[in-house]
Length: 125
Image (cartoon, rainbow, N blue to C red; front, side, top):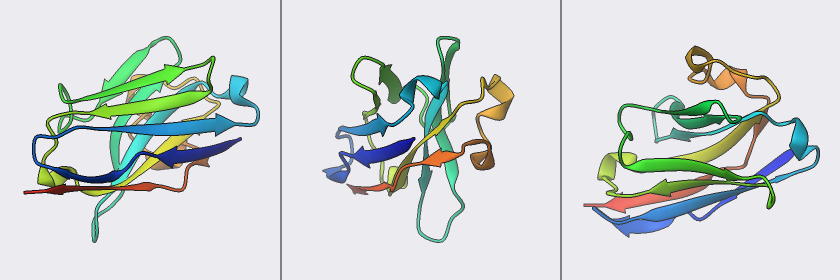
């Protein structure tokens, strides 16, 4: 399985971006997909996850502003980011796992065995 993220860029505060992630290989084996981000000098941070058809989970910092979705027919995962803030500036990574995660397990980056290469998002103030 391979993941390839795209869609990052430079946007002003309050703007929107839509990140895309192409999932290739044994795509049907992937149950949970998600996004993490890492800002300079900071640890990798959970952003959002979609656990099969069981539901979605968001970090408190993005709840109400970001939306994760998955198009199984196109083997793609999306992260719609609205009302962006400077603190959202980071490299964003799409992730996946064959595990059927419960909610409490989605926050730990080591849970995911598949990672995309990352796409830079910069929000200017």
